[in-house]
Image (cartoon, rainbow, N blue to C red):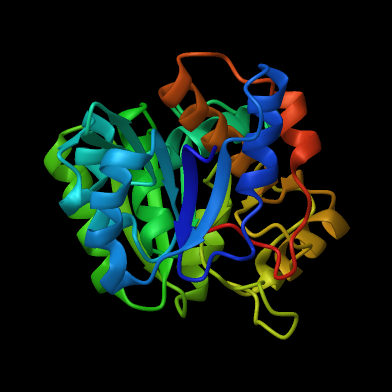
Length: 283
């Protein structure tokens, strides 16, 4: 019986069902996790269905912001980032949470042994993925977070939200056309987080001028796209430690599993259940 779902628009590409069912099966709980296409206008109706029929939900684009408004209550981290990717449903009460930030934080530890606390990060992009993860990083003790984007408005909104949380994290914005400023920042940051959709298509441009990367840079690169993007190819060519987004999905899914069941998931089983989908991304 399906008690858990991943929803989105689109959602057919999602690897969450195989990954989450691998975790449930390893605990002897069968395969209770399914998938459903839900359009934005259908989300309020879906919430009412979920209230009485489900125990948990994962949400992907474009539902994360609207879900924060529809949930009965929000966890602290969901309130901080104003975004929800996980619903916990108990006795008809829907609690919204966000596991994106902790998923990325643990992925960086898994791939690079890189903690967030006291470190500097450069986020390429200022969309929903950057918002949730950057705010989490600021709250987790990041020293400095810079946003590289074509336009300032979205980045400045995130910066304002982080400043309002009084985390002590310094934040700033770099226009993607400001080559000299970006070159200087690449020498100061510990980690580049590629958080745009660039790389999903083979003919997508790189998120910034890759000629600015140098072999001796003391940084790591994490691309939230699962495909071998131009950024990851360049990093590998230069010998810069790099990783794609697979582990982030596994870690955020594992956190959702803990919230739903109170049990520790088998991460190796979840990794084995993960398979690269057509299109290469889970948003």
